[in-house]
Length: 437
Image 1 (cartoon, helix red, strand yellow):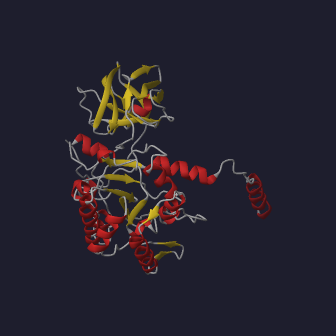
Image 2: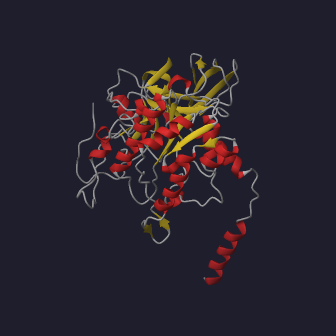
Image 3: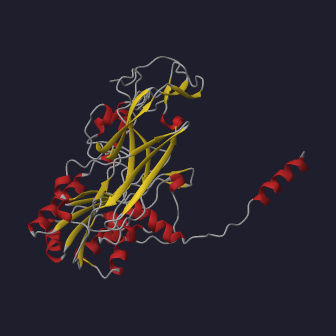
């Protein structure tokens, strides 16, 4: 038995061969970080930045960015390119009044005690932003060409974000107000950079800034990716993979923390099929920014989408044309709305396919084709324990985001199709109510 076990180990280890890295890891990290940037607001074409020589860089995260998560996302890159480093490489001067103060404060923040898990993973803390003196912000607004504030949040495995992580602190809100007042008094712009792990509250301060860009926890090429987007070297093409709620009370799951609340051993997930964007669209609930939202520096035009059905699959096709004034990529979102006459409960629309175009030059086009099986379009029927593509007239909705329909076309499923039979799994021990319209 010992020999047999050793042979299995040897066979396993011999199957693992060293792999030569075929691509430049930094190039990949940079491309991913650039493609993931999501432009949420851009009043008066504030971005891309032009004729900028000096930047007022605010926010502790601007000098010590969060580029990784906690737990399995806790990587250790050999070098992280900061915004400061990337600006200096471009010959952009940072206003010294802010630069020195934040650098010293960052040391204090990093020296705070934090928890560890299994003596392996560190539970890093969100930054406690310092109080900004009004006169310091005024001086910076006078001597710099634009004001940038980096708001940072971190998250990871082993525990949920706390409510305070969603809201801005008093110091963060105060800093944004002071920046908005002094920079706008000088007819200069304020740009908010969200170095975050998930949604945050935006409604209370969105009118105080001119542009908002989400960069996420974007890895070792952090600074280079951001500056490339800020100065127009790269046209932002990211889309939100989630909805940004106006407040926590608007999130259905926020109302069921578990029972007992302090140390729950039971949680009732009563959202049913209305998870994520499906809740906001189906119940017509407002959110700050919907799932799939993302702006560009250019404009795109779309053909009427085409639907092709065969015996097992369905193909969606659309042509995207760049009608704007710079090259750019676009993301095509294909949602499908169910038949209106069906009694089966379904969301108002569901994402059934998406793709990003290649870089489209001005006045050029790119065609997207996405093929899905009938199983991919099916809905689960609890009574029959099967996946069913119901009979009826469906609507293919080409969307900018979950709330914004660009073009539509219809297709017909002429008979009910059972695409997969199953059985009952994990039956609840007692009945409970679920969301319904």
